[in-house]
Length: 171
Image 1 (cartoon, rainbow, N blue to C red):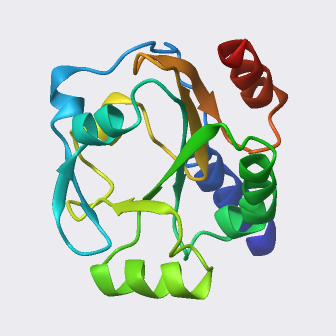
Image 2 (cartoon, rainbow, N blue to C red):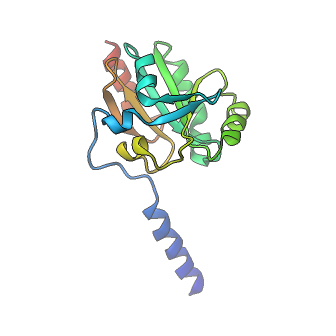
Image 3 (cartoon, one colour):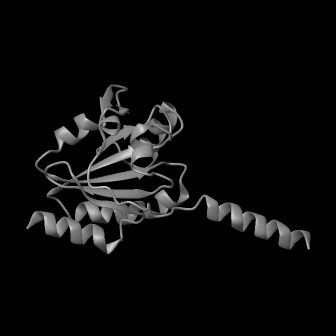
């Protein structure tokens, strides 16, 4: 009986924290989200707006991940395949590591040094992540050439809507 109660508790707890598609699929970013600061590999502060400006005119895939996230690591080979299959698309990796040391170690450990990487030094809860309803990782977004959100919510790099969105934007 105790085992059953424990299993039910874990199941209910897990459901409350699993990835759920947001009720509203947004197509743009709020002013507060755009001024959210991240840090690059060198520790330099950069805003979401600056990242978007750097990739303006290109289709951009944003990959939210962390080295401690088992689901992220499981998805990494497919995310790399998506990147290889789309050489005309820019990819940005936003890390939710818990520390700068963890960020640096994950970049080395998972061979991410040659990619466009940033991490949320402010932690998971911040204006950008709150605005985009980030409740779990991995998470993927596709941003169009004008910095609008074209695909708001995907939990796997294998989601066919990611590639469909990319194909549509590159026509």
